[in-house]
Length: 292
Image (cartoon, rainbow, N blue to C red; front, side):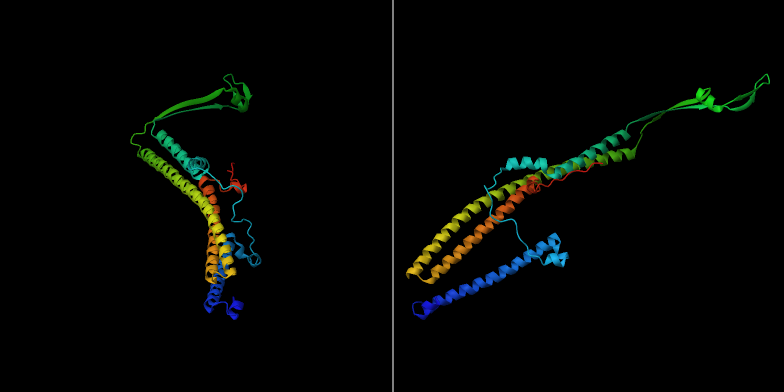
């Protein structure tokens, strides 16, 4: 354009427009570079590498690309909800809390019932040492032999009945357990409704991201064709640089739109995995309960 301006084949306004576009895009590049640095610093803080100067100075190499690999994921809301009901840990925690309340209710109910206790005891005694009988004869015996011979036993039995008359403590315990169980049932219902909402939103976002990718690819293809056509017209001298710059801007916008749609798709896939409780399965991680 500068060469054409020197030869008088290009108006001064067109060269200014080109220089203005270059300066504007240079500003965008600088802003994007610092935005990238801020994102990298936030990631370093999240994974703890900011605590060590050596690791903090290392460059980040991203291993995951925004472009989806293979076929786009497809899942319906009903299947996702059934999967979430079996794998979301919130349901296990709520079920364990409900089982604890049931145990407390049975214990409180037992405290309200009459209590009948039967106890018994049997004791064996033995006499030992030197003794004299009625005839005056001297005898020696061992207490240990008499102990296991059950010669001098002592035994008794006891039967006690306790009636819970006005047992306010047991009644209060029962009432507390019943209220706690009702709260846990309500909590389970809330968890199910929240999980259903999470699954529905995640599936909808996934479908929206898939449609956005398809629309973004179509918009990029049309922008590339428009750019090629405007560049051809400009080369032939039938059109000014203004239309070429406009086509470049539209092409960059279409590329950015497609990239953002691909990123949103990856986030939507992660959202579906989180909503269904399968967030760790793609990484082959399992959480096992330790038993003693």
